[in-house]
Each structure stands twice: as C-alpha cells, then as structure tokens.
Image 1: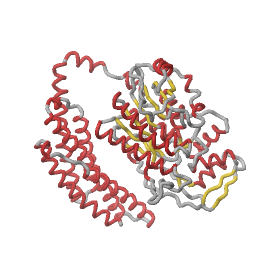
Image 2: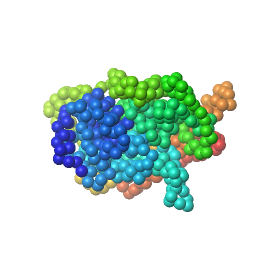
Image 3: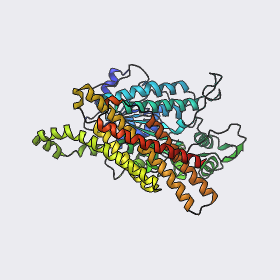
Image 4: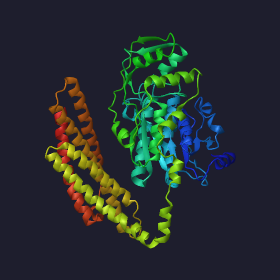
Amino acid sequence: MESAKSREKLKANVNARQPTALVAGGAGFIGSHLCEALITQGFNVIAIDNLSVLGAKKNIEKLRSSPNFSLWEADINKADFKLSPTISLTHIFHLASIEEHLASEKLSLQTLLVNSLGTKNLLDLALQRKTKFILVSSTEILHGAFSQVSLNNYFGKPEDPGQISFSEAKRFAETLVAEYFRNYSCKATIIRIKDPYGPRMSLDVASPISQIIGAALNKNSVVLAGDGLETFNPTFISDIIFGIIKASLGEYEGKIFNVINPGKYTQRSIAENLQKLINDLQVSFKKNEDAPLPSYPLIINPTEEQLGWEPKVDLSQGLRETVDFFKGNESSRVPETVSNQLKGADSAQEKLDKKPTLIRNIIITAIGALFFWVTMLPSFMLTANIYLGNKSIDKAQASLSADRPEKAVQEAERAKNSFKAGQSASKKIFWTLISPQLSSSLDQAKNYLFYGENIAEATRFAALGLQIIKETEAAKLSSEEIADKLELAKSSVEQAENKLEIASSIEFEENALLLPTKSALYSLSKDKAELTNLIDTLQQSLR
C-alpha cells in the first residue's frame, strides 16, 4: 500500500499541466532509462518498483534529484493496489516483468504473478483513468515447451525453468491486454523487444549476451558454446527507449511493434567486437550439450513503416558504450542519445500546448451545430466506412482473380483503414444507450468492423505472398535467394491464415444485425470463403 508520506511526495512532484507517466519497473535496466528519457520529453514520471532487483536503487540515483520524478515503492501484484485519485495520468508503461526477467533467472513465480495480477491491476487503472497503456513484452512469447509427465520440469529442464516460465507469463500478459483492448476499448499498445543490452544491464543472468559481456569484463575470458555461430539480434538500450516513446506519443492503439535490431550477429562476432575493446580478451569454445530453441521470423516492417523506427546504434558503438560504462569511464549517455533521435518530433508537453484555441471559439459560438455533427456524423462515418471497406475488399478479390497481387495489396490496405476508421466512429456513438436493441445492434456492427479488419489483413498478407512468388518466378535468382524469397512468402501466408482464424472466431447475433450490416456480412463471408481457398492453394504450393 502507498504510505501517507509517499502520497504526499507523489502529489508534490506532479505538475498538472504536464503529461504524467506511471512506469512499472521504473528502477530497472530499461525502466530507469525510460524514466530519464520521458523527463527530457516533458513528462512527470512516477516509477513503481519494489526495489527487489540488485542495483535498482543505484539506477535511479540521479533521477531522484529531478523535481519531475517520484519513486513509489510498491507491489503491483497486490489486490489493494491503487493510486491516489488526485494524481492525473496520461500514460502507463508496464516493464515490471521484463525487468524481473532481465535481472534474475530465479524469479519464475514472481514473473508469473507480475504478468497476471500485476498486468490486470495496471490495465484496470488505465481504464479508470482513460490513459494509454504500453506493455513492453518480448519475442520469447514465440518459444515454449511443456512436460507431459512431471510438474518438476513443466516449463523445461528442472535446472532452468525460468526461460519458458517467462515465455508463458508474457503470452498471458499479451492475451490479457488484447482482451482489454477488444472488450473495453483500452488504449493499449504492445512493444516486443529482443536481446537488449547497454549501460545498467544485469551481467548475472542466463541471457547469452549478458554472459558474454559479463565474462569479458569480469574474467577477461569468454567461453562460447559449440562453434559460436548461434545468432542474436542485439538491440541497444537507446534504440529500444526511442521506439517505446515514439509509440507512446502517437495513436497506435491495438498495434504490436517489434522494436528489434533486424541485424543478426553470432556469439563469435560479439566476442570479436569485445576483443577490440578489452585488451588480451581470450575466446574459447566448449561442446554444446543443449539444442537451441527454434527461431521464428521477426516481422520488422510495420515498426519501420508505421512507427518510423529503425536502430541507430550499431553493435560496435553499443558495446563500446556498455564496456565504458561498466569500467566506470563514463556515465550513461542514453538520455542524450534518445533526445537527439526524437528531435523534430513534438515533445509531450508541446503536444498539449498546441491545442488550438479556434476549436474552443467554435464550440462557444456554434454549440447547436456542433451538437448535430457530434450526434449524426459518427453514425454516417460508421455506415460509410462499412461500405468503403467492403468495396475495397471486393476490388482486392477481383485483383487477385486477375493475377494482380500488387493491386490487391493496395486495395486490402484501403479496406483495413476503412474498417478501422469505422471502429473509431463507433466509439463516438452514444445515443444508442437509450435503447437496448440499438445498443445491441451497435455491438454487432463493432464485431463486423473487427471481422472486416481481419479479413482485409488476411487478404493483404495472402496477396503479398502471391506477389513474392510471382517476383521469384520472374527473376533470375540463385537457389539461396529463391529459398529466402519463398520463406518470406511462407511467412506472409501464415500471417494471412492467422488473421483468418481470428475472423472465424468472431460470432454474430443475426437478429441484432441491422439490414445494411447483414447484407455486408453476407458479401464479406463470400470473400472469406474465396480467400480460404487461395490460402490453402498457396500453402500447398509452398510445401
């Protein structure tokens, strides 16, 4: 529970004119860097942390002197977790479980609790305060293995359950966020990271990158498993923070972004880079008894295109800053780096200050006309976007039939945007509350729009797969290049199938559907059946 003294401090350190962020896990490796960067962007920052992780207090030493920073020492897993209603929030960042995992391999149960009870408590708070919610997750959700015979090694081999336990915990956290987004319109975004490193990282955990850097610094000797050719995507901390803040400042509700360096580096190349920084560093190899977990293709394009993010710090520079930090040669320059990356974008405070006074004058002078538009415009936009979305899907299907996948991709993208615009409009319709029947019809329209969005996405991914196959057949490529292209096509078709599965899971109450929506649903269901056949054909051709 929050003490009276803590409440007074939080109250004193929050300026109501500035955006205020709650950062769960704010004293950890990533969390402390995020807190620093948010303050440079004009935020008040409240860091929640139980300070159980070694080094957490040292991470926030400089932060505690800032008038815009407050530390709330609390456990987000407790049922009575709550924040004083006098403190207004604009953003909630949930990094607590990531920090637990990055700081210790012996917190399996704590990791499960933070991702279940802790995530729910923070989501409930986000709904109460109508704030943005950003979950920092991990690509580890794509891994997993279960025992069929024993609870002793349910999450993997008995001596190392933490990794798979973490994967399951993050999977549940993401599922919980998805349910709050779909059922309660929570303004949620998920950021997935992989292989983070940089100043303040823990060097005592089972992460291969942490072990390599830790061994190089503490023992002047690195022992690599096998031939040292296992690959990773080391992503420097300033690039991760840059991506998290960009996502928080934009309108990306319902999006998942992989903030991950697409460049792959072997253990050997990481060790060789460290040899250039640490004199007389010895590198040796040992037999690897464990089979590595299978890797999955990382989809980075949406992060680059929609978020406008790409890594700025290469491996050699990132390792140099990390080594210098741990040798005590310099303090972390991450806040300065992130601030430079964000130049040209409005800070959160500037976004608040730029609210035009013209709108207020229009409200005062034309309240009657505004009421009309507020009441009728969302309904018109809802209907118009259902029509436009269906029309674009029909055009996309026609383009696929005409063997023009590139045109189908464009039309499917238009359809997706129309259905999403319809979802936004539906959230602004309030007058249906006067009638249970109208309210039920609106709920079905929302289901339809979400259904249409997933059909559009499935169409787009299927068209992308077909486009890649066509380009591969037309180009003169080597066997290796053809294999790479076909792997991309296979990934796109798998994503199309996933989107189709989501659409198939949506149920409708036909009695509650209005006639235009019922007609549109019939048309879209026919498109779905044709798309299912196309995906089956593509999957067979790619086997």
